[in-house]
Amino acid sequence: MNVGILGTGNLAAALGRAWAAAGHAVLVTGRDAEHAREAARRIGSAAEAVAAGELAHRADVVVIAVAWEGLEAAVELVAGPSLVGMTVIDCTNPVDFATGAHKTESGSAAETVARLAPGAHVVKALHLFAGASWPYTAMPQAAPVVAICGDERSSLETTAELIADLGAHSAVVGGLASARQAEEAAGFVMRVVASGFNPRRAVPDVDPALLVRAPERLQPAG
Ligand SMILES: NC(=O)c1ccc[n+]([C@@H]2O[C@H](COP(=O)([O-])OP(=O)(O)OC[C@H]3O[C@@H](n4cnc5c(N)ncnc54)[C@H](OP(=O)(O)O)[C@@H]3O)[C@@H](O)[C@H]2O)c1
Image (cartoon, rainbow, N blue to C red):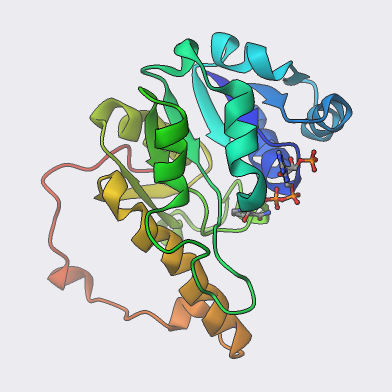
């Protein structure tokens, strides 16, 4: 796939490197052309810095990895007719790191993207794990589960495929209207970390025999 990344910081570089290692071509853009070139250098030879206006034309999927404060401006750089029908994966964390609170009164970053890019098929994903988590290569039986939400099945499948390439499973936890809950989960994780505990231990361990089996799963990893 040609994976287009909007964002030139640490998450963009980490995801770009992991997807490049999985065989994808990576296109990077942002508000600053030199930052985009630097991000492409950090990712490696499979990456290319492109002008913002080119991203949607050349990418098969667009991944958004920018600061919440810059989200609207950044999406406006790439939005346009070529985003219509395209999978757009929003990784933004619109939560206050100190308090864990969502920075908006209502809605979500992912729904903001959907509003700014009408016709794009937005999926919320990959906001909860540090970029350094990817690719996950340790024990397949303990592979991370990435909660994703979106309204278009084909875009959920594309997202799950890219997440499988990172070594993780995808769990579809709802439509795009569930994105706020997924984003607030990042705030919850931060609060547990701030209290000195590993958030892995802050959710119940469920006996596998009790798990309700989804009738079908999207691209299980491994
Ligand atoms: N790092 C992680 O491990 C991780 C994991 C999950 C989710 N996230 C989320 O992913 C997003 C990016 O995180 P990061 O760690 O990569 O941050 P970062 O290294 O600080 O990079 C921030 C990116 O956002 C851009 N940006 C900031 N303000 C902007 C504005 N006003 N207009 C346009 N672009 C703007 C920056 O562009 P410039 O270079 O031009 O400043 C840069 O490309 C955040 O929402 C973060 O919460 C990060």
